[in-house]
Image 1 (cartoon, helix red, strand yellow):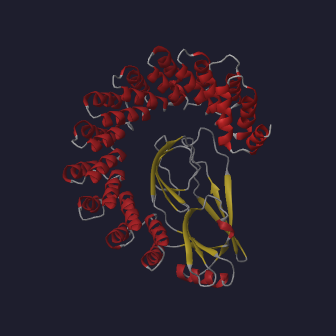
Image 2 (image 1 turned 30 degrees about the vertical axis):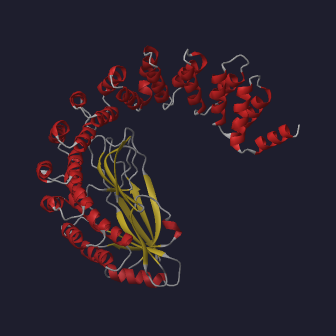
Image 3 (image 1 turned 180 degrees about the vertical axis):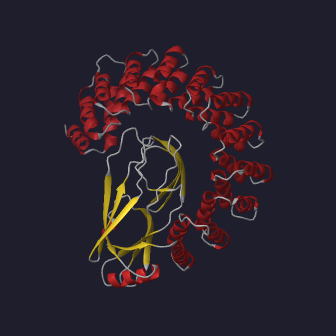
Length: 533
């Protein structure tokens, strides 16, 4: 299971209606997408529909329908048998999302989202189905997926035998058989995911059984994660965190599960664990878990305390990174206090990254101050680099820093940082420095950086600089090197021309050297021509 925390710009189409109409042995399942509300979109969504053609299978219960599907598919290609179930609220599977606040977990083709929209609305999908891909001869299951029926799919081109809706008892019993039997590990993992997605009081007990008894660590980890989502299992999860004989990764996962749970008292539990757990890695995971908790004020206070006072440098750095995710001016002020008070340069570097991650304008102001005034040269360079991570918003500030500082090393760092930002203003500054800066090394740096930027404008400049009859030879050599970094169709003809005609022997030699390193057939032909004269 991969767990990713992310923020992106968002629009969600969430549909909840499914309709079925049957003709002969065919069923056409129609899922109508509904406009969720103006809170999800600034403009009304036009009604849409997803039409999926499945083969309807009848039978008294799930097992009977599974057998009937097997009989009907006998001797044919691989096929899917699929059924829907009662889905846990507050979970979204493969929704259409552009902006989202929460966590995502991906298993196979299934992406599970748990979180809210920017306005705080819970994102969820309720029309899910278990899909089992089977071999036609022996009926063996080769693949399991949980699919959102509101999303139209091709199902790999295989037919789908639709078993209708299974009640919780028969579905959970069936899935337990898949996860407990001698099945491939991946199938067991998918079965546990399917169990966790059921809206049923028995799910927590089943998941705890997997944690206690499974030999598959991924199944155990997945079960621990879902126990946090199910809720009410803090004592069980806390015991895993405390258990020094338990697998360390599972202990860390249990801490995160507590942090992400909506249970009252989750943060108090994490603070208690933090005071009692000795393992350094688990200790840090507890800090990270606190950053995931919904009680933001209490989480902020706890994390700030760790960032200020913990004896473990890595724990302080973990807490500092978490502070950078709190979008509040007080967090910026506290990060600056930590930067001033902590003597460890690794912690200081982490503060710089945390400030860069914070969207508050105040963070940008503080970073710029450090980029201008930090007495430690290494930290100052680092401040400049992370400032550039804020993108186009800092271009003018970096240019002013370049123009106002006389240190060649600082200026070189600014140029390098600027070059990582896509902006016409950046190119203008690089051209300006490359044409006429009084420091030859800075001119060469700007030329090299221009060579790394695609586009006709930079290529024309490099060409003119390299072929100038009265230019500085060192600058021209750097221009030739930059040209050689371009794609062969741009670079090789220019290099051949410079190698033939440039009045400066040093520049011609560099062009010849670059041609030799290119291995291009046109360069080989040029050398053949030169050697036969």
